[in-house]
Amino acid sequence: MIPTLPPEVVVIGNAGIDTNVYLPGDAIDFSVEANFTDNRDYVGQAGGYAARGYAALGRRTAFIGSLGEDYGGHQVRETFIRDGIDIRAIWTDPAGTARSVNLVARDGSRKNFYDGKSHMWLQPDLTRCREVLAGARLAHVNLPNWARHLLPIARELGLTIACDLQDMVRPDDPYRADFIAAATILFCSAVNISPEELATRLLAGRPDRIVVLGLGQRGAALATSASYQVFPPPPLDLPVVDTNGAGDALAVGFLTSYVLEGRPLEESLRRGQIAARHTCALRATTDGLITAAQLEAYAT
Image 1 (cartoon, rainbow, N blue to C red):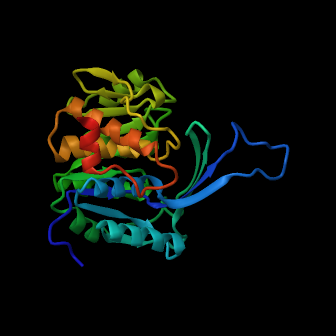
Image 2: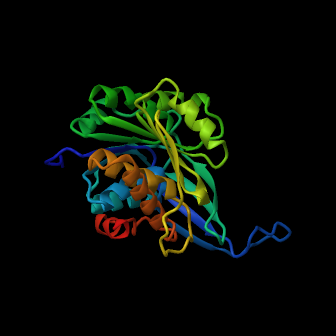
């Protein structure tokens, strides 16, 4: 079914099934064969968190990406349909649905083991993708290899292009070069690199660009050609049980506020931080991502 109205935002990336492994202690005991953990499966990955995040905020959302014809793929499709997400541009990956195994410590920190299946060589249907992108205002782009082929189309159609570069360890990474060049708004984690140096490199030659950096427990930074500001985490009385999806929520909250609602930059950054902080209180689920009413209540 073709939606009556075009989407406001199109999420381009990988969605799939995450398996979170919650460790009972501070480390894995490799001296024994078995460790007893709490293991939970749910619809996740960057594309899943982002698409469901916009839908939870009440935005008209479409998703472009691949899924397998398997149990995980059916779970993602059914979940997106329930959320009202436009799935016309989902196609089949013969290798199956993307997966992640995330080891989560008691403080909510995690190590991710990512299986993107065929994303390095899949080719999207560019005609169908153009149909879905037409009329949208925002393209929220993650990093599957095939997504770089959609960047010129989004630019031609006049969408604001925002790319989530994930964890950055070197600003000159050739894999990310196309995504960096295409985007007006960039998000990334800077916990493993100097954030000031990274911001300077990403802003070089782009006076129109906005860079949002996740700083972990230190909060987030907002960088433009005019300023570099660090914002501490919002003082919300919520537990930190799982940091998976926090960066996606930061991007979703910021982009909804700034691009779709026209709020000022600093207010939009704060609202993105609130969305991220809310996500950190969720344990192995994207069902409870922040709603517009919750975000408004936290922000006031």
